[in-house]
Length: 228
Image (tube, rainbow, N blue to C red; front, top):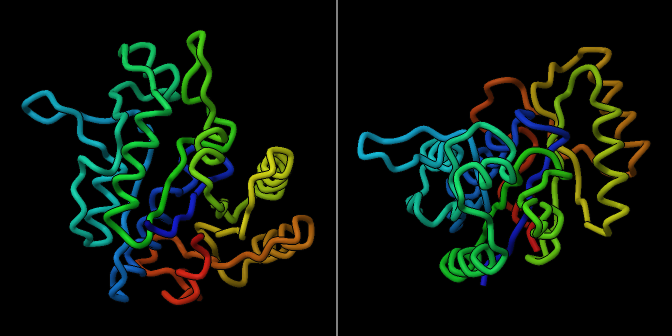
């Protein structure tokens, strides 16, 4: 069975998919058997045959160079660009925990390291139609440790602290923070890094410049040590 790591973020479009791709790419290029999984993804386009393209999964696959099939990366793919719980209701295909467990375990059996990306921020509802399923339920059920992705710019202290406090409340282990869109030497962003470390007690493991093609400051061995 694989060792696994969950990627959450301080909000939507914060760079979780991009950072997931960087991590998978680093492991893959070091010769490690890395894979990607996301329980539910919304806002996807259709192929000519009408089937949905899991866009985040396709990005990670192409960016990292892994051979894992798209079909194994995400069991619930929706067209509507809304929260997964609403997309599922609009499209008539609610998320089932049993399906998530089964498909994740299949990926876990076939690969050594699996990055699991969250949908939106950590409080994202995955199902809310009389039955409820939250992203935190999935993280707990799969027994995943987490890394938090945050934008390096203005407002990140608040976003980091709220995410950290919520995960502490839910007893979900966080191993560190990754700053995206970081400008080295920028007074505010350097202070954001220091403040987030001091206020959470978590290390900022990497500061990633916009458009980076590799994860700065983290080698494959150190990355692999973050997986449980």
